[in-house]
Length: 275
Image 1 (tube, helix red, strand yellow):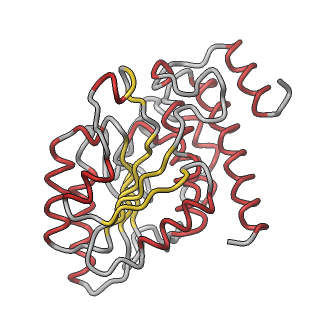
Image 2 (cartoon, one colour; image 1 turned 180 degrees about the horizontal axis):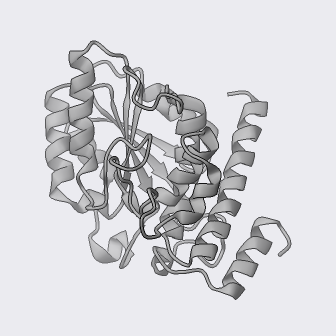
């Protein structure tokens, strides 16, 4: 990745963080913490790595993205609107009655959404099915599944992990938004997972670690994952919940808390470098 391209992506991430705070403050609902932690991951996928076409979202042979940690969809929607899947002005209808931009991704209503998610733990198994389907068609498409820390405590994740290894789905690339925090507290407080990389290795996966807030590190990890010949890959992306807003960083209380007026002013000042 060139220095110029890296700077372009960093600026795009900065824009998305600003837009996210504006959006969630204006509608007084949504999930800021996990959206901010996944900013660079989603942006790198949509603007650097994935073979997708907003004008033809169902085209054969496309790469697919599954937002398995569905509550982080505000950041996904911002990326999709910027990419051209739907008008940017529609973002203000997020989580409103009759909106096609639901609080969790809905494949039946929103163009470009590959799987309806909300109940945690379903995305990896569905991604496995998509990956197997693409292999049957001799497609070169990759299936990307974004997971959350709390989500990998679900049994369905590990059932899918076993099957993916058995069927050697090297076109399945999971990315863990490893911010160490979930709805009710830290990962260590709620359900310690130990060495997550070792666990996936024991299940037969290729494991790659990266800095989840460095677009170049993420891109390098994805390209390394694409070289896997006979194993699915998980990229463990180290992140910070609420990244970019000091009073949100690392706090489980900002999993889904509305942004108040004073908090909004402080967040915007921080993003603009005023404080």
